[in-house]
Image (tube, rainbow, N blue to C red; front, side, top):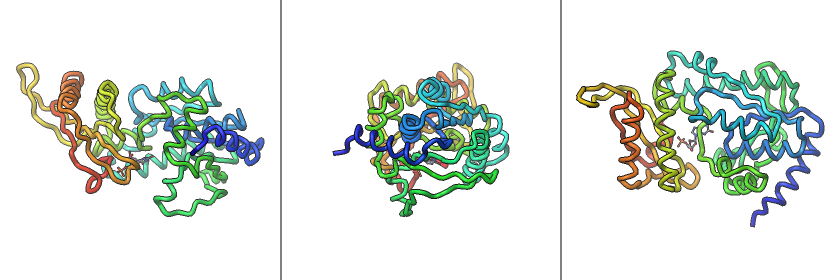
Length: 306
Ligand code: XMP
């Protein structure tokens, strides 16, 4: 049986010994892994850990504000509002892999600025066991990463032997609420890969609203899902709103069950729930005329669309 309290005690001691008084930095996204790491290492070295939250503009509705509220009082917290930088970098880009690469590059550049500002020596990462087992990589406990400025950071991975459920247990035991400990997985590039093709501010706002509706209805229905989200495909579809023909966006809804994201099944969600989601999206978001439900499992589809 995994003992979260014991794990925390040992991990805090080990972090104190390894990191000592050295400045340490972590990219805190608000996901369960990075949040748990931030709490553990913060407990060990206090203000010597700097937690950088990057607002890409592609987070879920109200999430940047919530993450700030939750962590500002718990750890040394830096909020980087980088929305314009990300939007500008993605202008005209339609290829999914290119979008992902650009987002990763801008993210690292911003992170680098903070690492330099604090003269960080260590980088904490929320790697967990499946991350390296899946890639069949042999995790090295002390490897380094070079940032664009040439800074070398030593990587520290306190959760590397844990599985997701253990991490959730540690998260709860260290004082994080269910809002964090039970959080659904969310891709790093965020809503930018749920707006298919070119990312525009208008489309991000639409998918953000649709995503919030999907999640609200899943919570109301008390459904246990792996992930539930909205996607904005390219192209438009005809509809009729009021007594007028309309030509608007489509929203695809994806709700999947999975144990580890390696495979997944589209969930057999009750028709009434899907209808409520559809009705809310088409009435609350005026530019959407049509809602589609994705029935595809993984494989052959992936969970995300891009
Ligand atoms: P796919 O789409 O490959 O996704 O079936 C499997 C799981 O990984 C998540 N995902 C990501 N997570 N950064 C992440 O941290 C990413 O770039 C990324 N892309 C996909 C996805 O949401 C699903 O849970």
